Amino acid sequence: MTPQRVSADEPTTRPDDPLRVAVVIGSAREGRFGPTVAGWFAGRVADRAGLRADLVDVRDRAPGEKLSRADAFVIVTPEYNHSFPGALKILIDDHVTEWHAKPVAFVSYGGISGGLRAVEQLRPVFAELHAVTVRDTVSFAHPWHRFDDAGGLLDPGDAEAAAATLLDRLTWWGAALRTARATHPYGR
Image (cartoon, rainbow, N blue to C red):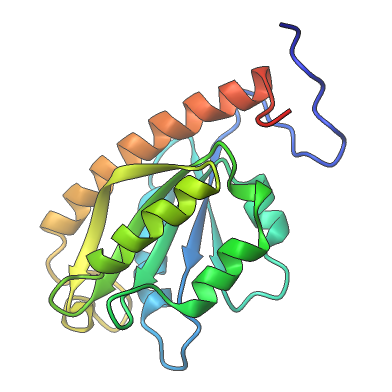
């Protein structure tokens, strides 16, 4: 089968370009903790050669361009009432093709469950959008006591290790799927 041309409105990348990772702040509430967690995680992305972080906020007026350019996503989500925030669902639903054939990983936070119930509800949503979810996660139970005023972790050991594993998997999927999309655009 002959590879199809990429249309002019699709971003083009070279295999040696850094993988663009959109780190999505999933909460829109006043006084939210999401920017602290997302900022910490974006720092982990920036520390990696071959990766580039772009912060996307559900409060952004026009996040579509950043989502379209992304090779991979990290959704930073709290758990609200055993689920994920409504503002995050709106962002996901308003941008359908941006998620196609791309990996999605999760960093969650909340009470005793660390936001993992929100993550489990997000997995089938992204499956419906033809995205691949990464099994490994980073979760913070009661994160308000785990970060200092500057957004750094007070005891980074376990979280740093979990973030490293998540980024290893996300990088693999991101590179593999970017190559696949370049060779044969998804859904065409």
